[in-house]
Length: 405
Ligand code: HEM
Image (cartoon, rainbow, N blue to C red):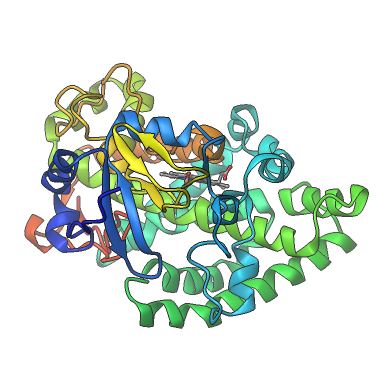
């Protein structure tokens, strides 16, 4: 494969504000664009909807564990990183085949549509309380008062973590969302240590006194059939916690912003709430809060959409580019909350398709209904030009979203 490293800025404010021109330029280079990013090093981005879908849905040829494609260790992990970080990354998202299926099967049921339907009442209640907090706040910041605490409260409920511990998590998790450089990455380690220690205490408590929650179910699985070691349990809860929390935060803030900036679409939704599911999917496509997948590695030399790939090349599906590909979506740069046949890849695809997609969709639908039914005339509390996005690669995240009633 041509090794010309392309220089596209995927972190700057102007990219985060409007990523479409960058993605169009990348797709013009081709379906596979060699690049280089912090900590991961050389990585090639798969830019089109067709090629990204093909890669994600072909686990026989593209693996997530680099060792299956000739590497010595999992990519991203370096010898100098602390043991706790190595351990926490040993989750289903880094495993292939039977190892992956075994871990996913243990938690699948807690995220099925039917189970998620049983969380609806409690999600509505939490959303209501948080909207009261927002109304009482001085800054009207949707991120701090709703978009962060809502998914955190929901995933804590699913896992069965006590309400009173939530301020602690918020502190630990805040460090994670602000990592945009190597220093930020180092500052993360103490928070990871606290979180691991805390989760281990929770496992112990649930062994002694099981409840009707996911941690209790997982602890039992561990004890019954040698199914899950304590380290695997820790890695699983950590993944659910991180994946279930941050991503939804950025969908909520980015999605509400998109509606406020596309007032006609917001009026359309307020006039017809039966559109709330398709609006949610369109906002997922439009915002693409998770902009890229974890790396995949071809297990052999191959030709991929006319591009020769060497075994072990690190590839990442650029989901946000796939979601704005005009070959897959009519007028992709426009928000259309009634979009039909919306085959967006915001949740990835193939065997690692997001486990929490029903939960995330449900949270977003409830939030949209409750927010805009309360405040149909809501507006932005600051000038468009003053909005700031985090500089973290791969995530599209507003730092604040001040609203005005
Ligand atoms: C808007 C919200 C969300 C977005 C955009 C999102 C996006 C994604 C994406 C793109 C992947 C695949 C990554 C890859 O293939 O490399 C993924 C996987 C995953 N997500 Fe989500 N996610 C969201 C919410 C959630 C929630 C609420 C949970 C709940 C626990 C969750 C749990 C997971 C897990 C466990 C995986 C790994 C699945 C596997 O490896 O089989 N996500 N997510």
